[in-house]
Amino acid sequence: MNVVVLLKQVPDTETKIRISGDGKSIDTSDIKWIMNPYDEYAVEAALRLQGSAGAKVTILSMGPERVVESIRTALAMGADQGVLVDDPGTEGSDALGKAQVLAAALRSLEFDLVFCGHRAVDDDENQVGIMVAELLGIPHLGLAVSVEIEDGKVKIQRPIEGARVTLEGVLPALVTFGGAHAVWNPRYASLPGIMKAKKKPLETKTIADLGLAPEDVGVQAAKVKVTAMELPAERQAGRKLEGETADKAKELVRLLHEEAKVI
Image 1 (cartoon, helix red, strand yellow):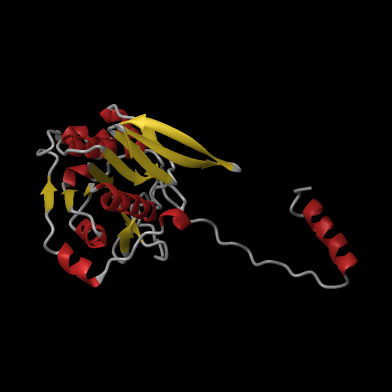
Image 2: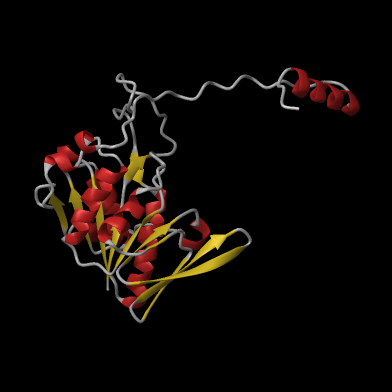
């Protein structure tokens, strides 16, 4: 069994984000980059299949050379090999453009399952994985908290309000993973794993290698474009009400009614 995990490198959630001079992108000059947390769940799920079913785990990503660090982290966790699509022509791709690149790369690989986070914590689009499944013509099963493989089918459970629902699809299929840290709880890379990761195969490809033309991806092909970015307005300082409880309650109601105008 072959499992391919789609991995995205994102800014560390503790990084202070600044808007660049063009007003349409973030300043990347002083950012610490990490593996997208939801993709970490996907890596962990794949590694559990590696242990239980002997699956071969491939990490697939796109982006500049710095993304190698995150791929190596997944390899140190236990993945078998990595593939990076590194091509300046992909810069500025929207969700569909990214999905086009990843789907083209997947067509060049053997896979029974594709795993990925249901969204990335930077763009927060929740689209790329679903689009990849559509472009490949394979089932998409979302937000898995369990994965079982049997008789050429994949079965997952996903949470719904107060319960879980079971979904089943034929292989090959794409499965996404969401906010279930307690379920997947990604493992740490061990020192031996880090040393082994340095010798594991990691292939770099361009869009030409994937049979894509420059006009197929990148900013020129984007159907959704960022026109402007701005930071949230700073919060005003809170107000502390003094006095007895009953007096504070009356004053709070007055403020909500007359100043905030929410009641």
